[in-house]
Image (cartoon, rainbow, N blue to C red; front, side, top):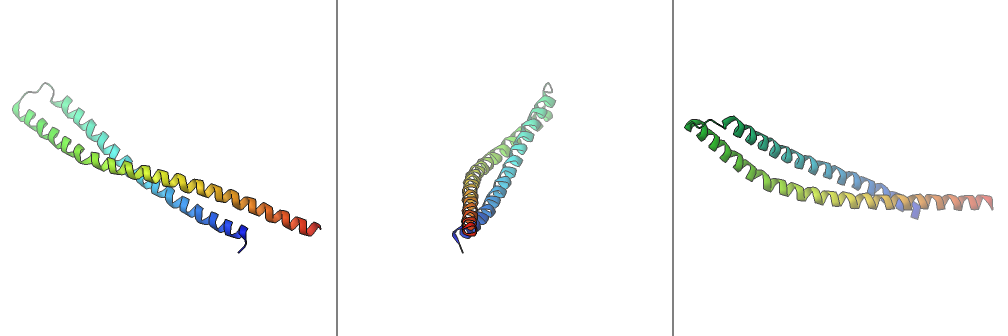
Length: 128
């Protein structure tokens, strides 16, 4: 295979790798977004529960409110480490996608330059 052919093959492989890394970034972002949404829903439910029980000092209502607050706090405590792991995975995926994208662009430029050089050489041979 010629130099231009080698570079073109590498550019195709780099494009495949870039696509794979971009999909991994989308997947990591979607998982992170789902956890962020769960945390936001939990915060909204906590605010709604506080508003609903405000002013009602009856023991059953207070007991129920405290149990819900305990559950919500435990759920938040479980989601936060998951969010931290997902954020770390998302940041790693973003870095890998950025590198793959840059690598692909460089190889595409090199492939284009190699094609242009090959055309110039053909024109020089045919014109000579």
